[in-house]
Image (cartoon, rainbow, N blue to C red; front, top):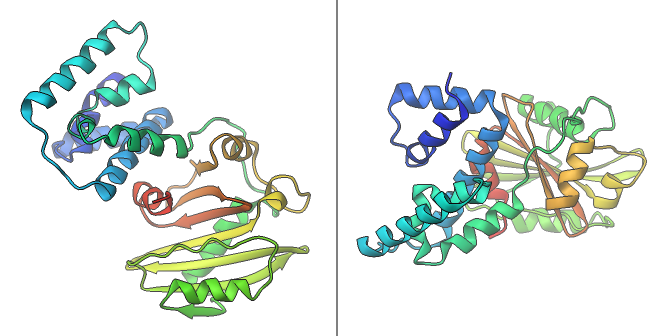
Amino acid sequence: MLNCGEAHAMAGDALDRVLPGDMKSAFLAHLKACPPCRNEYEIELLAKNVVRQTLKHVPTPSSVSQTVVQLLRSQIEKAQGRSWLDRLLSWRFLAPTLAAGAIVLALTALLIVPRETSSDSAHTAGNDIINQSLKNFSLVQSGELKPSLIACYSDVIVGYFQRQNFQFTVSVLSDDSCDWYGAMANTYDGVNLAHIVYKRGDDLLYVYEVKKADALVGSVLSLPAAAKESLARTGWYTDPHHNDCNIVLWTVDETLCAAVSTMRKDRLLALLSPR
């Protein structure tokens, strides 16, 4: 099993997808067993994806690239302790983007992505939003939970929820890669809930939405302390406890959203992040 230092040394090649098969397997095994390294790698991967999606690639002159890398290395070597920012700046993919200002975008992405901050993250209660989202996602996968409305365009879904007269605005992603959208509305002990299903090729994305005040300070629904802490600090929370799907919570104005999907976490975060 790799140690954290060895995993950090491989991270650049992993981001560039040039790790040999055996090394890639060892690297991924370390990430699976080490939440801090996994979380750091996912943040770096998300930053790279956001940069690629947003900025047109412009080759950096080799002299500029070499100068930037040398300056970064000298500053890191002088530092008394290597913070997460030091490690971020030392990874190879950021050097070519510095000349185009992409470091600003990457740091913005870092600020909106949550990190695991508390061991108090159990969610087994019947009124727990993550627990409800997982169960609903399972029912959607099995076909037992069917949308009240299916449409090819997100505008139709927006109109459906506007007619529900909720006390919060339902956030609907407009995704060109979506095969179809599904929508449902119901109540849980008097609290209005919105449910959206996105079918994207082989992947399903289910999103549970509720008024933020009902989720964070109300008495009907609940969230684990780790989720509340991260949402209050960053507006985002990723749940670490599921091998067969990924769960992301975030807030949009006065709405709390909980997404469950079979998509890889980096793709899911890139899809959900502001553009």
